[in-house]
Length: 197
Image 1 (tube, rainbow, N blue to C red):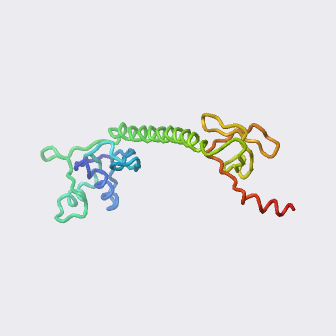
Image 2 (cartoon, helix red, strand yellow):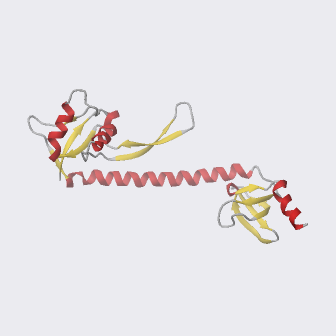
Image 3 (tube, rainbow, N blue to C red):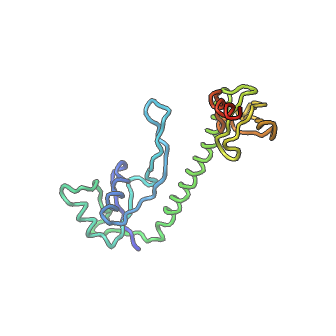
């Protein structure tokens, strides 16, 4: 397949591609992910972003349709042009786009690695923060596998945020992240005691 080169404003790169795809044209541009922080906030949005802003590609076989869209007055599509040199519309072969396709794959893999590393860091910070809410001897219930639902007593609070639990006299020394447990309130255990009586 041969590909035409489309040009557009930076902010319209993804809009053009999505609009043409919705119209049945197999437009493509390499897309990655980036984290955008909200103004004056620590909150953020993970959004798609073009890796090659202002450039997109579309099948050369659809040149006529693309020109009609690009030059139509009041077109519902974001503005774009089909790149040409003189009277010629240069095309790129599929093999010429392979490095860009690989670049997109590599960037997605880097993003996945970034999210995994951020997840580990967030869990570490959350463990340390939540550990402050507990005291030695306090009874807690595990809410995550593999001891989900078991109630235990805290016998050690570690600096990294892990809690060492003893489950009703057995399994002493079981280590559980503090973010995977919840405190047991007195009212949670009263019904069980009443049934036992």
